[in-house]
Amino acid sequence: MESALSASLATLLERFRAGQRTALARAISVVEDERAGFEDLLHELLGAGPRARRVGLTGPPGAGKSSILASLATAYRAAGEDVGVVAVDPTSPFSGGALLGDRIRMNDLATDPGIFIRSMATRGSLGGLATTSREVVDLMDVFGLSRILVETVGVGQTELDITAVADTVVVVLVPESGDAIQTMKAGLMEIADIFVVNKADRPGADRLMTDIRMAVHLRTGEAPREGSGHHGVDLTAATRKRADVPARQQGQDGVTPGAPAWQIPVIKTIAQRGEGSDKLLAAVDAHRAHLEESGELQARRRRRAERRIHEVVERELKRRAWSHAGVQRLVEAGLDPVSRGDATPYSVARAIVAELLGRG
Ligand SMILES: Nc1nc2c(ncn2[C@@H]2O[C@H](COP(=O)(O)OP(=O)(O)OP(=O)(O)O)[C@@H](O)[C@H]2O)c(=O)[nH]1
Ligand SMILES: [Mg+2]
Image (cartoon, rainbow, N blue to C red; front, side, top):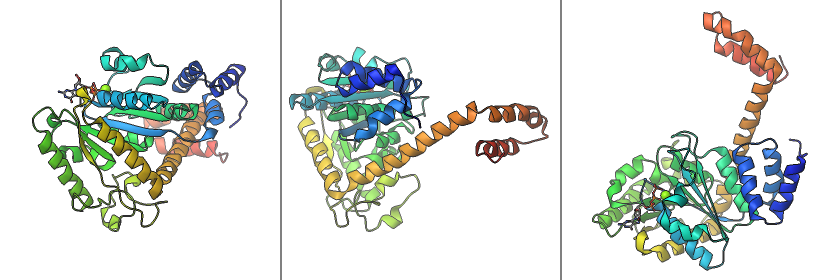
């Protein structure tokens, strides 16, 4: 990848490095819109590596994720930290301002210069976080925001993607969001580092707490109050490995042998009144300490790095393929034969790949 930045991006880079918030906003737009040179800009900026503490909040629509996020953000701000907030809305590409607009409790935060809020849409209802959304989180990180909070609605595959940006995943459930078995089916069980049962002022919260504890127990195969074996070295990992469980949940690479396993806490909150948020703050910090002590933080970062490398290579290969003159000719020449049945997409594709690899 060449690194000759255009003059305007070079200026942007300077302003970003000088810590100007407007430069962060602009860099995010450049990346989101995949404007010319955006990867060179990322290359220049991301050399600093991840430092922020990243927390992802996911769960069903209306569970109280934004309310909880606001209480976390408020606490971090009170402690003098710079906070980044990314809210991902999978349903509507037009809801850019939703988080700020109709969420009154976020308004105080929105005018605080120590907090940087960005709302973005996913690509399609099942698209999950776009690659560039992950890169936006990286930008906030290298800009120096020390806490980054990411909110996604847990629908389809979206919640699984939260593991691609967050170190700690908080799954927010409410009594009316269904039983714990449904949660397991939705894939939320596998990704949770911390469970929150919000709207504890409503009936059914204690029942849900019990159900979640049982479900955690079923999944990890250990008694609810003992070390869960969910993270870290898991002696029975071999029998539990499942293709649909993210590798980071399977207790492998880089984890310090003998490190204590993480016991998934289940925390009751009434986010509206801020009840339980102190417990959640403590759990987030405890999980962070666990990540660092067990080696799991490094393991998660390695897995993120692998995923990111794959994504960037795929993006680059696609771009090169479809802008390659020889490839365009082969596509054009293949259309009639394939539509007539004289050739197949596979023979054409093989010729295209050979052309691309210089063996044409
Ligand atoms: N009764 C009750 N209502 C709550 C509680 N926490 C949040 N709410 C309300 O639930 C509604 C949804 O809260 P949000 O924080 O916007 O939930 P969300 O999960 O971010 O919602 P989406 O982003 O739309 O999926 C709001 O009207 C809140 O005031 C709670 O503990 N008890
Ligand atoms: Mg919300």
